[in-house]
Length: 361
Image 1: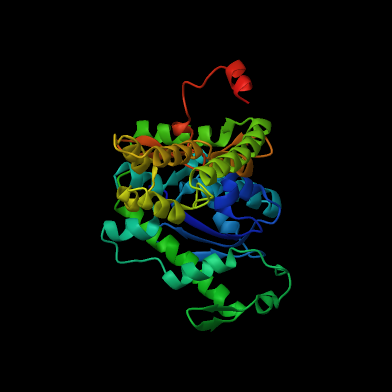
Image 2: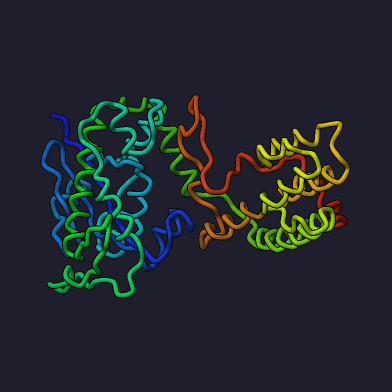
């Protein structure tokens, strides 16, 4: 007889923003904790665990090696093994027993998000939009987190106003619980309509998980120095632009005054945009006035001095000095990885030698 599978979904809260710091740091931050976990074993009704509740039957299934499914399973693995294991004494959840319905969606060319994948395969079950909005509210840090051991902790949760409707802490949290259980129901129905990964692809997904857990070493001192250098270069480019335009445009990132000045120079094409491709197209013109060419060249060079990638490196590097979860399995067709956070696939190649860089600086 085939053992039933377990579907799970966590709802969490933290003082840090998941998108800002990345999953590795989010799951390890001391303020990150769990509101609840919804789960469903086989075709049984979705159930709910909350802090302080009994999870014996659930944990027994995991210890016995039952297959555990989640949508974006690396998130559930991170929360389970970094929060539930050390704080709630749960057993370790092994990646080898964990399956990801998001990965299965990507492998079939379907949308990755649960709310888009479900209608794509004709599922009647839907995510709860109000519950999602409440989830985003509850994911934010609170000044005084509730003490779960106190019987009246639900009543101590703050009130929210959402869509003109006021939610008491208890009402909002109960709706969050239902939202979490509904996600498990949708995930379970989605799983029934997805093709499982082949044995080979299953091994690729497990390898992808190990790669993302190991991470990529980052030179943080150099990244921090690059941020300072990029900031200094922006000041330099702003000054050059202000001089070229006689003060009409004083910042390479303020497009409206630069467009207006270029229009006065006869570059009406600039009104369409000043993105990288637009600037390259304008610079390719033979009839471009010298002043306009100089201003656009400064704009083009300034784009190369962006510190956005370095800022992400510094924010998302773990205490081990590595960047984690940079690769999305099957995120691009046909089956290629997609980059997340720091786009390491797009790093500049053919850089000059170190001694040349030192001379430039």
